[in-house]
Length: 253
Image (cartoon, rainbow, N blue to C red; front, top):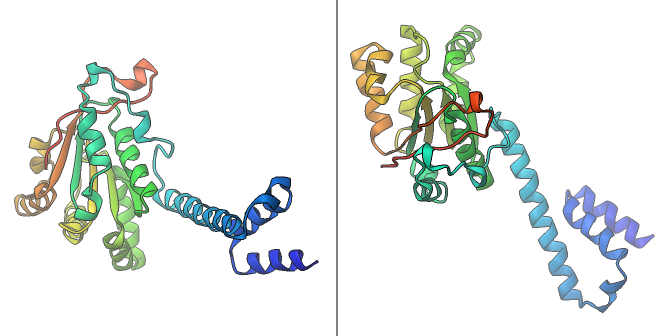
């Protein structure tokens, strides 16, 4: 009866991991041979991992990644992709998120740009960072809706606080003047403090022309390129080959 009350109290305190571990210990015959300190250490360890797992699931849900299961460990290392594995792992395990760097991923359609970007974003979630995925072609309409509802300012503040913003399919389709101005606001809020991942079929040297307005383009690209890592994917289309996407090469700050 006393143990039942203890378990109820633990759950009321939201110590669910500890409660689950205690229930398991009660059913294990060998636990009687362990000291109080040893059993307590195991209970606390379970609670820590329980909270970590729940936080990860929450971060991944909020991120809304296109490829939620993409992981750095599954990156395709085929030489035909021009993979610099050390550059990818160095980036994944480095401080690019906290340093507010940009990651620019370009290459032909189907080469695995979005998959690599999601793998980097997923790894950021695993390290406790907040992430948000956005497809740029759909962003234009979403911005109109948020302006119309008066929610743009609040959303802009939310984006400014997000550790990693993933802008997928950058440079795909024309953008209007309002979207250009909004993109500048989004990028400017993040420059030097929050990380941004951009994927594009369009080569970086053509981004200025795609943005359209020379003054705004200069401002956006200046902020994106201040501290960046670049990957250029090569090889056949993954979609046509029916294989897992690969990563690319060429990383720089």
